[in-house]
Amino acid sequence: MSLMPVQAPGIALAQPNEPLSIADGAAQPLDGLAPQALDEASKTPGIGVDPFGDILGRMVQSANATGLEAARAADEFAAGTRDDIHGTMIALSKADIEFRLASNVRNKIVDAFYELWRMQV
Image 1 (cartoon, rainbow, N blue to C red):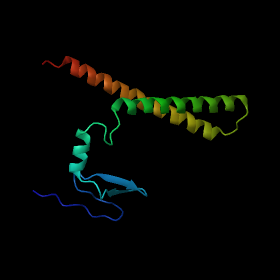
Image 2: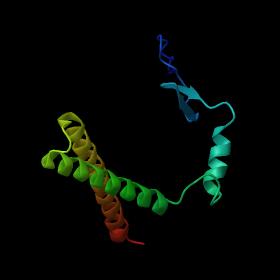
Image 3: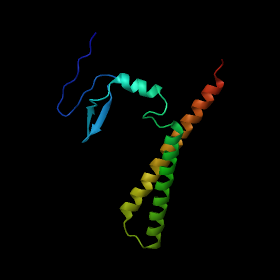
Image 4: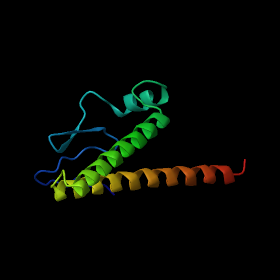
């Protein structure tokens, strides 16, 4: 059984396991990278791959900065120095979403740790 690609206007299709580049809002296959090159790069430490701890650290720093910015916007609105209720609510919503994302990632990591801990060797 063979799968036929769906051809529709505005939809860019890529072959399975082909890396994509998001440019101008449309997914485009990367011309210079082959799947084998990505596999080799992922096996070689330090080439084009950030350590997972660094990624998590940046995510937590970003969530913290967004939360502080939202708190500052809320304080300014409460003090009357800011009259942009929509901007304040958007900042608070962004901070809430980013905090929930960080919490869910943390919970998934803890679940994975416990799953590995329960694994019998």
